[in-house]
Image 1 (cartoon, protein in one colour):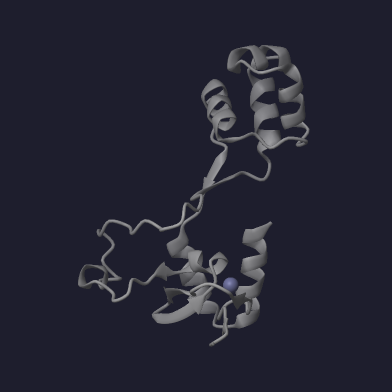
Image 2 (cartoon, helix red, strand yellow; image 1 turned 120 degrees about the vertical axis):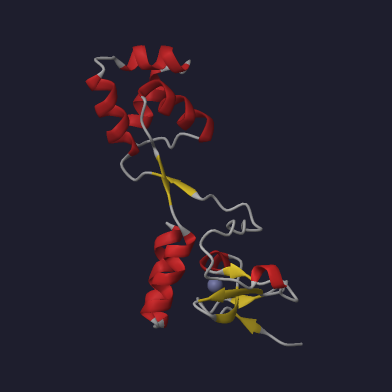
Length: 160
Ligand SMILES: [Zn+2]
């Protein structure tokens, strides 16, 4: 039996490794790291060969990875916007149909709002709380770094 190790983070791959294309080279990586590249189908279908065509529809990742992340300072954004509108926590709670304690916990970062709650807050306060991250940009960055050390630190950052 062949034991595989992820070519990015070095973790042993128990299952089948994912084959992804990162900056032109195909690497066998674990699930975690497969998000850094384009997953290669076996065998690759010709219509996915054009990597440089920007007008091409972006290939959807197979796993349900979030393409959006809650902003780091979501609590500040919510609090500032709420205060700008002159709403108390109670008022905001009423508008989105949540308890005051929920608002309080979100604003003090003791609670991370779920997707539904994020949407309600975004709508009520007219804000954006999700940060889109572009996997294409990330893979370019990985490609230009050319060192395993940086790859490791990116993996860490994305895992937080
Ligand atoms: Zn890995």
